[in-house]
Length: 288
Image 1 (spheres, one colour):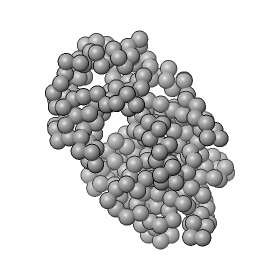
Image 2 (cartoon, one colour):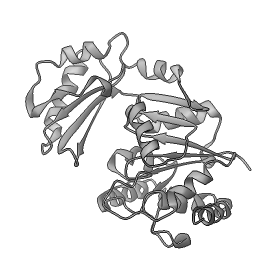
Image 3 (tube, helix red, strand yellow):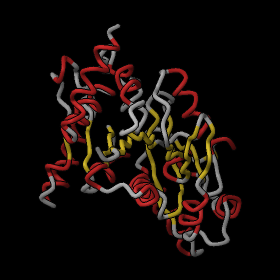
Image 4 (tube, helix red, strand yellow):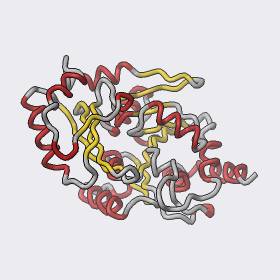
């Protein structure tokens, strides 16, 4: 059997940190499944290396083969616990900023102090990621437009992402090279490892995952995803006649509820029916 590349978001996709209940044994089954040589696992997350490692330890997540982190600005290969950054991906996205670095961009935006805009701690920054906090309940569009206009005037080709951290009650604003996003990083990894679309699947849950969920790649939307994300994703795919590329986990598969890792297992079996036997065996082992 050919290699399967499973690319998955972490928060509220594999990590059960949403409001909905988790299926007992689902994470343990996925961890057991990940040890099969036919399955290669890539985490795709906004988290940095430290936060990914913390999540892996806290939630007993499987050891991945790859991590796309920092909102798509870093790509790591993991071998025997060692993390190796892929410098070819750094060069790829660095073309958008040329010789302009993180400090150049923060200096350029230093006088913009509206909407509670303030730099995040140094640990949240990297060479190709400039991250700010904002007030939580704002319309981010005017702020994004102002920053985009300033960047464009200075020849910086960037992608600006705003999201809300509900738990901390604050906004998160990231400035990245235009090429740096989850979908481009996944496709770069596929090319690097010579794994085609027919053997690749992405799993996610939120608006930040929509680019990958609606890209035409095989994709899984876990059952705990918000209804507006489901509707947006399906409407986008319907316009392209690609609805069959997105599987909406619904629960009921092998007694699982479809939330978090259970939804990933359900979707994996949908796109790769031969994995159903693996899932059944892994669930049985997880029950002890």
